[in-house]
Image (tube, rainbow, N blue to C red; front, side):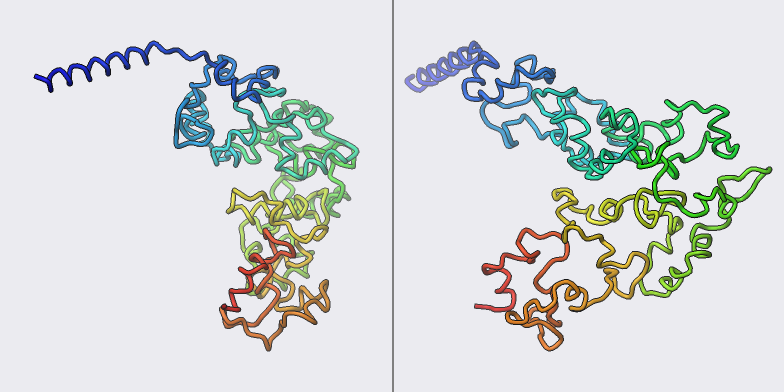
Length: 405
């Protein structure tokens, strides 16, 4: 009998507690702002996230505990997609902006509120420049394309994803002819060619230039002289877009010095279908040697993309030096395309280093690798968390790789 009474009492207490818990109401967001005053300040911002503006913090955050950072109900990506379902389809596009693909919505947007449209973390051009370092170069030139001068990157680019390269909202000619009328004057200026399917950015810089009409400053000699027939076929009396043979064959007719690079052990770019056009613009460029972008931008389109946690500038060591200061761009007999191996390359700038300290050279063998001690035995050419580009902490970790205690 006593057991039955105890069980009934427990049930009564449980139901009473449950009923009481259900009646408790939390004054959101006031109760949250008691501790999170910094978040309350955001209510004064002009652009507020719909969820935040509604004042129900628990729509995104768990009030007690969660396995996710900032007490979020779930991970960032999943949480954002609960409202922004359309973005699930966007990330399936052929070209996805890296922060979107990595699920880093907060890299560009503030989840609560901002002074900028769409709760951007900063003004759009500055936000783009935080990753795309070349923006600063564009703004310094004499002639700036109107959308860039107006700080409206999204006039031409989709910030999330696109079916077109470079995240363009439309193909290159469609994007351009959305503003620039394709009339007789434009056709005559382009030797009578139909520009409907043209690639405008092989001659014009879409962002800025030191020359009028956004023509890029450094021009290929045939282009500068108007001798398009030097490289392009003539069809029906007009110069066509088709070139006379493959790009490599055509380029090497004049650039004979590059032919020798094909005999090198490594020359992957020359073997590619696009060959020279992977890196060079055949008409004009704002960079030296008709590169399609500055070396620091161009090279990192392919290199150093495997570590999304580290910005590209982390790998751009040796300030004020171009990649080609150390590397051969066309072909080499070593897999790093270095101008020379061993100590010679480094000693061109760092003469006499280690002459009175740690020994280096052919006579010094690294115990852990059984190879010759070179600069790269201790230093990293690209990206290091330690001074002098040391591979490990010099206080102990680096040394004990060879000098066991």
